[in-house]
Structure formats: C-alpha cells, structure tokens
Length: 459
Image (cartoon, rainbow, N blue to C red):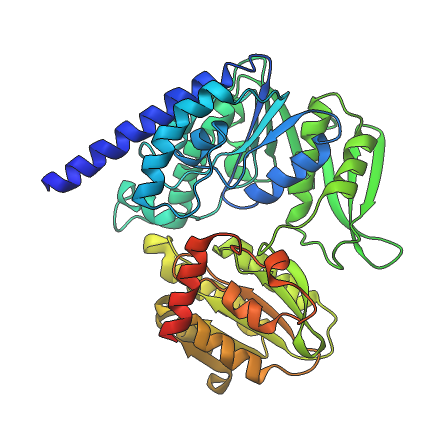
C-alpha cells in the first residue's frame, strides 16, 4: 500500500511539474488561440481535418500523438516520449526546463486533441482544462467508449445503464464547451442528443453542425454520391453550397461527414469562406493509418484497416462500409475484443455480433469477450458455426486469415489496441507493393514493435 501511495504521489508531482512548465511555455505566444477537440470517436480524424483546413492560412502547432494529462504538456514543451521507460521519463524531467528556455516556436494556433478516460483527476476533462484553456472547443459525439471507468457511478441494477453512463461521459467531455469564455466558440455535432442537451450551459458563441436541421444558422453537411460514383460531402451554410469529392478513397464513411463539417466550421469561425475551407479540406486531408483506410490486399482483395482501436459505434459504422463495398468475393469480419466497456461489454458485443451476422460470409475473432459474448450471439442469429473462427492470439488469426483469403474478398479488420494490435493481421493481408511503414498504424515506435513481437512469439 505504501509503495502504491508513493507511486501515486510521484505521478501527481510529475504531472504538476510538466503542467506548470507547459503553461509557462504557452505564455510565449500570448495571442495564439487554442483549439481543443474532444469526443468519444473521431477526435483524431477531426483534429487532422481541422489542420487540413487551417494549415495554408495560419501558423498552426499541431499536437503530435498527445491528448492526455501527460501527453499535452509534453507536446507543448516539444517533448515526445517513445518507449515510456523510467529512464526516458527521467530524461524528460531534465529536458523540460531546457526546452522552456530554448524553444521559442511562434504559432497562431495550437490545435490539440483532448481525450479523457474517466470521471476523476487527472484522467478527466476538468484536469485537462487546468493545462490549457481553449478559445474554440470542438465536440464530435458521445458513445460508450471507456464506459468501464464510469460504472461505479451508476447503481449496479440500474435500468438504462448504457444511456446513463453515456450521459455522464457527455457531461464531463462537455466541459470543453461549457467552460469556454464568453468570447469563445463552441462547435459541436448538433445531431448528437447528449451534446445538444448541453446547449443551455454554453456561454460562448454556438456553432452547430448537423446533417438534418431546421436552424438556418447551422452548417449542414451530408454524404452524397458524385457523378463519378465516388463518395463525396456536401456543405451548406446559409445560401452557399459546396460539394467535395475525396479521391483518396473510393468510399468515405457516412460518420465522417460530421467530422468534416466540424473542421469546416472551425474555418468559418476563423473568417475563411465556406468554399475556401472546404477546398482546403479536400486538398489537404488524408485518412489516418488504422482509422478506416481502405487498402489493396493480397489476391486483389480490399481491406478496411480499422486496426488502431475499436469501440461499438465505430465497429458498426465500419461494418456498414464493408456491406457497401462492391467487391466480387466474400465479406470477412475480422474483429477483436472491444475493451473498456465495463458492465456494458456483454450488451455491446452481442449487439455488434447480431449486426455482423447479417453481413459476414466468414468471421475471424480474437479475445475472451469475442468468445464469451460475441460468438454465442452470432450463432443465435442462425449464423453457421463452421464459419465462426476464434483465436486467443492475433498472430494465429493473421496466419489463418492469410491462408483462407480468396480472390476479391473484402475484410474489415478492427479491435481495441491494448494487447491485440490488429495491424499484425493487416500486415499479413496487405498487398506487397505497399510499404507497411507508410500504411499501417503504430509502426514508428520501438515500444509497439516490441509489443507486436511478443504477440508473434506467443503465437
């Protein structure tokens, strides 16, 4: 117990140390505006989309793989840990004041993700707002992501448990909007009812983004099919309409429309025209590795690479994309456990299984929750048990899938990161003309390389 308390104290002191130095670093750019992005899903996509809109018009400091209580202050100080060893942390402690003295980067905007894991400090939004105070807050959506950390706040036998947990998540994440200064701008997904319920608490200027609205001041954004039969996005603001065609991918997930709308809304708030903001988005945006990229696979297959992470809403969205792909072969659903769902885990694994069973020709599954909850739910729909394959190890699943892949198949590959690391599977399925270092997630860190090698060795 004493050791645990000492570790907790040391961690608290370390966070305070970096937080105070980061606040001093930000004072070097007193006129710079801070744009904070939060939400249960789509934070990174929205973060990158905003950067695509702004990069040609402002000097933007973009947070680099940093969205937490430690990552944000280190990013402000231009310190980026790689392996998270004790030696590296000690080195960061020594480098932080040196960077404060020597790094004088000038920027107009600091664009930062703000992710939270739970309701208590330092893992909550309240703590992140002690580090930075955004002038513009962007809120994407509310799902059951990280639900397990909120379980203790809900009675064990409570009805509508999933919705009650989501409501608590919305309130905590919503501080990014409700704590904005009166001269700030709150930009949010008005189609999410839990975010809309926060509107009366927002003191800042409100900017709503929605796919369906009766409010003439909203930015309306919808998916469209362009003349070339590609997925596009239509933006409408007041009397102006702009259509975009993203040529980087043959299909843009419907859920990304609002993320793009939030990015364009940031441009409008910063005095860009609708046309300029939209065109810069089209020109500069690239899908992130492991977040739903559609890649060329072996045997002329298509791979929806969502290997970076998984939670129910994103998996359901990607299953719909798989359903829509016009491949000539089978639909393969390759899924691993969705983690950090707490007491909602069974509910969500069963719900996803029921939907996946309508789409899949074959399912390859990894993890205990998939075995305990997903497989029985899929079988209960009448899905052929002989086409349900479960593995305890990701590398075993990868080798099996590679062997079983047929010409023109399409596969969704997605799991929570933790100990699953489904980029191992994508690597086996990826067309050999594509460089894994360029296309797959978590490739440029020795820490993740070691974690992958451990899974491969165990397989």
